[in-house]
Image (cartoon, rainbow, N blue to C red; front, side, top):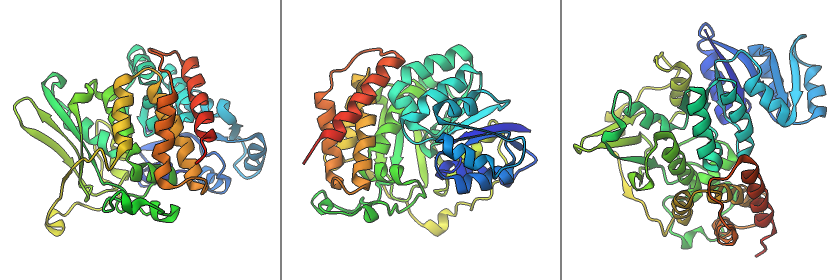
Length: 381
């Protein structure tokens, strides 16, 4: 039986992780979960899965949850609570499914405690890839990617020599506005932006998919996960989201990983690696699909992806600023403060204003993160 801790159990990845566990209770034990502000769902999860440790956002919410969970369940809160969930239990694997840069410190704490990581928090590697990869190397733990794209590449590379990889290609659905021109993006609403054609995801990631920031994060992540240069990482629009990504080798052969767009498949692979179990997911029927389509990436249409490549290549604190400015811009868009196209303008302005620092320590990353947030919040149109 594998023991699991979940950072972000009430979000999209967290709930799907628990769905996988629910279908194989003999294989998994939930040791600890964190749920932020969604106490109603969190309490339901605690009563169903019986974790020993639970974390919420605030002290007040911790008191509320304590009254509704089984006796003996420890309830903690805040950043310290997240770190406790990540590092202070008997969990073998920590699923990091928090949204945003709040996932960085708990993930590093889990690595330091010798836990294997099921990584769904993109911002951890985007903001501090050099620190995380060094910590992983020192502790000898595994980082099992949960993103469908990185899971696909991980699977394609099983048994292969990374030195014989020519390039990898990350596929992109194109998001909710993939069939619109830039002119047609003027005045789009939050509701329209949240209508992803293929995947069921949280609001922030769905907006990031529409701007292609999400794909930019995946490019930076892939650089760190697979130790590849940015010149070896391509992005291709694939509307059906059936080929999740593929690897091209020096002999021009290509290995791809295919499946229906269902996050439970890569989540389960991270939970069960190196084994594969039956899943509660639907089988892929290529005959029913009939054909697959592909489009070359247009970096003028999707400037956020261009900025992601530029940030990754510059390195240092630049990816941190890219991520932090985007978090604020997306939050402002969801609140109706700025338009959809102004998201990219906020990011670009922050990157132009920022002075990059090479090889930053964690404290400097935190400082630059706070600077970028404040600057992105201050931009007026």
